[in-house]
Image 1 (cartoon, rainbow, N blue to C red):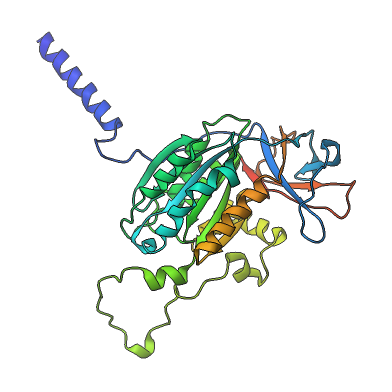
Image 2 (tube, rainbow, N blue to C red; image 1 turned 180 degrees about the vertical axis):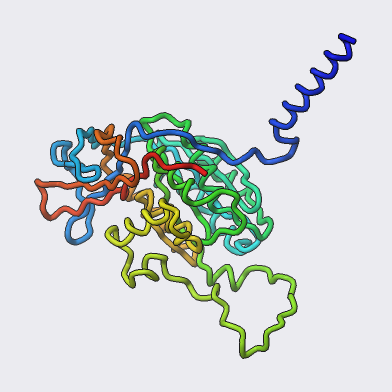
Length: 360
């Protein structure tokens, strides 16, 4: 009787462990983030009135405000090594574009991460496939990009950014954490939500830069889907919405280029779960929400110029860090930077972060 009881207990324990572990060949579950802000890192790019980068500023030149309250900041004017996740859309839509993307491997080290940096390569369609863990070897980075093959029609963009944040959160704190997202602006099939992913990116000080693949190119070059019967008469059918390059969500809402003043209220609405404003363009949401920049390309030269411009910005940044003195304030914390000594300076940084948000 005792032997039977032990056998039953052992069977229950085995079943419990089996339920907790992913089956062989299955993708590990999406990362869930449960954390609070400790140190906020705010990369700052400073330009003059003509749009040129301003170099040579000293720590004493900067003042930073968190929700209007001045903070005790540490400014690092020296170069900080970079940890980079290159997240590449690899579904069937981009089959004709992948050969262009594979050629940028040799550009990553000299233009973006430098000799002290590191990069990982993540490909995504319905899978999230880490082709290369963090490395400084340019040959391994190039080889990982070469391994990417087009897959299904699914494009889990939100989940890919989530995985990128998960990979970066374990990198040393003194490194700048960057995601370079090369993809269309749309998401097809993610399990996670853009809101929670952006909160995680902000809390772990991850900046997202996007190099958008033109929807015109993917629409014209993607393999056609099997035709489906359309019950509507031709006169009742709308024009294909995916053919023209769509404006950003901020442009659609305000009719402007989408500066900081317009974006912050939209982001607060998303965090409050008012509505899914950026559902059709999560790439813009991640970029503006973390202080990154969006670029786009249709040809090889445009892609290479975008990579060069990302590297130029990263190597022109000043890094400000601080521990907020107003952590008791829940909700959105807006970050603003001022340079009193240079009135011609135009500092740009991340818009802020969401504190004490609920994960659902």
